[in-house]
Length: 107
Length: 114
View 1 (tube, rainbow over the protein chains, first blue to last red):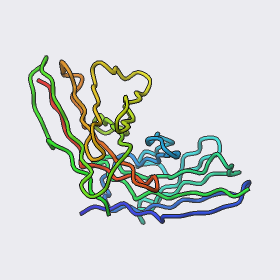
View 2 (view 1 turned 135 degrees about the vertical axis):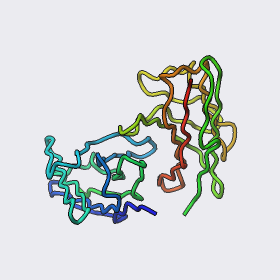
View 3 (view 1 turned 45 degrees about the horizontal axis):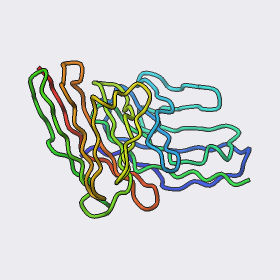
View 4 (view 1 turned 45 degrees about the vertical axis):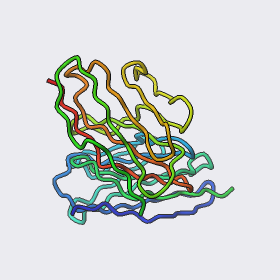
């Protein structure tokens, strides 16, 4: 079946940049999403990218899409302790999610 | 990994009827379950957080009297769409939270209201 894969853990120091990577297999996805899940809470949409774009920037967030390699990344600049959460990537056609990357930000 | 099931996987109903969707964690106890809806080609939208033994917490803009949530046990949460109308047609997905806050998603229920 179609899969979305992410690494499970990422640890960075406060102020550094974080890069969370995701690979997917369904090339027909129209949109690719990043969701954030804070402890005890449900998923909230963080940002998304349309499949015909290579990059989207939104304040501290930069999404890069490499359609050829089916690789999606989320870069968080100047990572803060409040960014500690689990980040899920998802492709929209079948709404398949990765397992989530747990980002830990150390002071 | 842990398994979350939903029932039914799809349902078609007439306008004005109520539809109940079940979400079960099959091999673990889930204190917290979440309900989402997804319109075609759009992102997932969190509707409510369901906590076992207490009232659900609804997101802003979600009518609690229309979308009734019951989390009666540690393995079952139900979402009832009351007096469904065509605009309620959507894909409803639940997820269950494990001990380490990881999310396990159900396969979703596609609701079509005629």
